[in-house]
Length: 155
Image: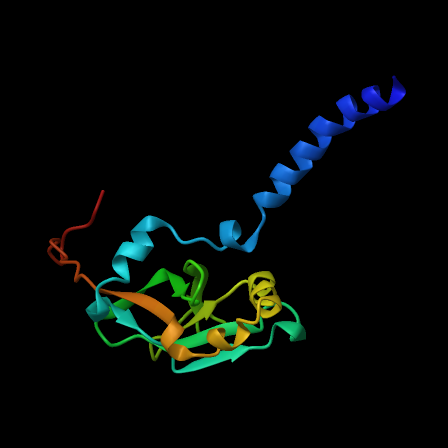
């Protein structure tokens, strides 16, 4: 009787914990939105990195790529990493310089260290080191026209 009671109490708790852990898997946490995946289908809007660093054993923030964004374009806020035998993973894009002002249009594409370590356990870490597997969507910058005359001031 006490065994049945223990199972009835622990089963919902176990299912709850399993569901929470499943929601934190690399495939879920580093998944790419459909809108980003649609954008990388056009090769004219994609650049590959100049440099890729994959050293997840060194700690956080040691899996990244450096991208040069062409003049007249701006970088999207998501980098896509493709790995054979798996779905694409996404990371975030940050300015290259610590001040946030990127003079030469370079950006970092950061990849989650936990996801990199997970790929390492699957024997796929070498695929992260290949620049062709990293993609950054670039968008044409739009010029904003100033319609105010020099003597007018906005309200």
